Length: 114
Length: 117
Image 1 (cartoon, rainbow over the protein chains, first blue to last red):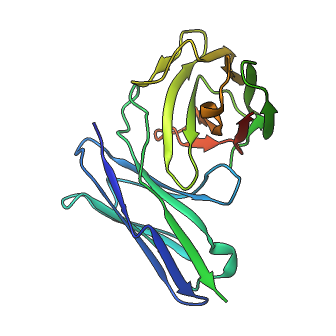
Image 2: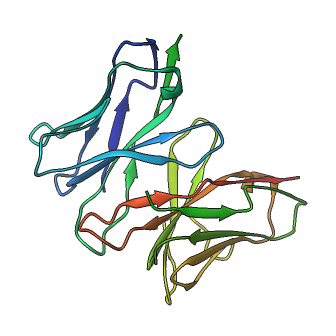
């Protein structure tokens, strides 16, 4: 089965600086990679995702890059703000119907220092 | 994005009682929903896949008789923790698969925190 590793487990960044979270996956069949933000006591919220047919995707201050050959993908948050503080999870899964189970990374607790 | 609602958000019960948690997709029909369990400061662990009109598929190690899942309609799945014990205390989260598009994005509920005394 799929195994997703995520680093770092904790990350503190000065407000305004950039934050980068990295994930690796093991199953070459995985071709959909979402990122979720989870605030304390709440469910995960999808913030961005990428499919394997593209190498990069950007949405305002958030970007995700994918290296399918190396089986790793990264989340980049620029101009960080205090409200970016949360736990971030990467995930991976194949896109074929009938196999839609997401495998999550272990999470990164991001703290933005004002 | 799509809205998935979970209820209750918090529940406290006595040991030995059963607790039902509801997961609703509010603005779309979800033939597939997923139930997760999350321990403090840990990742989400998939418990089971809930398919409308059929039996749920449980992950290895998850007790079917302990965690009853019913997906009776296209907008509602329920998880019942039967004969709950303190070790069942956890944060339970559901997600619903968006039917449109090729990716079938998953949208998550707000979670339900169960405390068993």
